[in-house]
Image 1 (tube, helix red, strand yellow):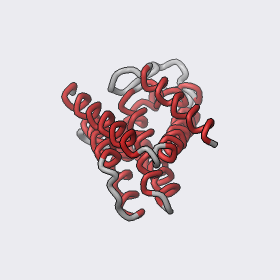
Image 2 (cartoon, rainbow, N blue to C red):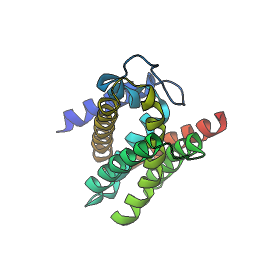
Image 3 (spheres, one colour):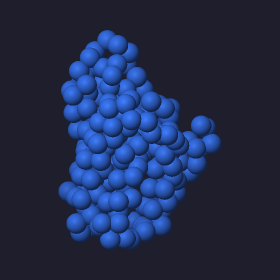
Image 4 (cartoon, rainbow, N blue to C red):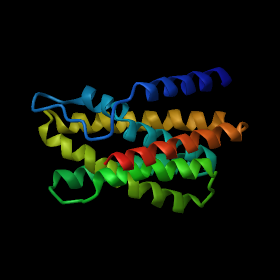
Amino acid sequence: MKISTNVLAGGAGMTALFAGNISAHTFGAEGAGFAEGLVHPFIGIDHLLAMLAVGIWAAQLGGRALWQVPLAFVAVMAGGAWLAQLGLGLSLVEVMIAASVLVLGLLIAGSVRVSASVSVMAVSVFALFHGYAHGLEMPQAGAPLAYASGFMLATLCLHLIGIALGLSLKRMRVLSRIGGAAIAFTGVYLLASL
């Protein structure tokens, strides 16, 4: 078990090093499908860090939050994508995505403990904006449902990697706090870049 969480932690670190810039990432009119949706959360540092942070914080919270927080994020994210498909306007999308990185980083750094229901509500707010951003891209996609399935699966995978990181860092609280602070600092940078 220790080796597998260390491998996941290393993989997550390498993924973060090679992640791209903040912003929506469109693939043009030519056929974005499942593979492009699967890749999407890995190519933007904003999405990548938020997804990992949800898993890490869920691991810190433990109990029911361990599974409720990530599943709520994915469900509300799907709802946000659907709202974008319906053409409903939502403002401050990029600001809220960057703010999610900042806030989730602070929650991890501070080892903030709240009930499962409060944590679900907190991540759901951010998930709505992440999903909306994904949904804005889907009209250009050749296969919107396949694309959505891809980014939802990728999000779940990043949550699982985050959970593995969070569980492996439970005994090393200093590293957890440093990691959370680094995520929060990245959120500040992302907000300043808008």
